[in-house]
Length: 116
Image (cartoon, rainbow, N blue to C red; front, side, top):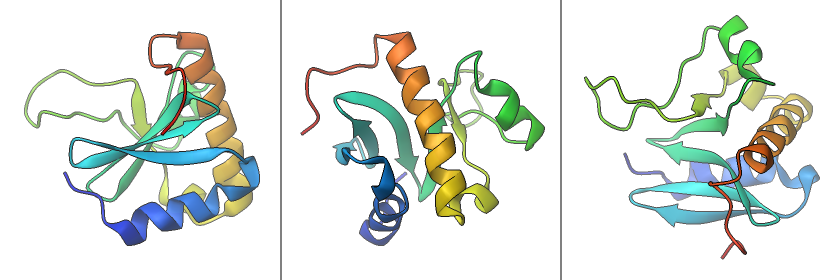
């Protein structure tokens, strides 16, 4: 699930107001980090934000679902697809991204010492 440079750059531009957001290649996609904490994935030019109990209802209400790296398998990751209307509105995208970053900080294991 490759990510195009154009989509990655678009997402980074949309999230620029948050500050400190960087992208790092992960397999054929990308992970997005803020201050060393991963909070998003891009796979197949689809953006997924980190979800936990505090923000899951937003995604459920929008009818979105989790990232499934293995099609046809029940395994899902705690990253859910960002609704298109959110991704088209910088203010909303940053608001959802901030919640995802907080989810990443709360869950701990997805942290790194520093983003590259």
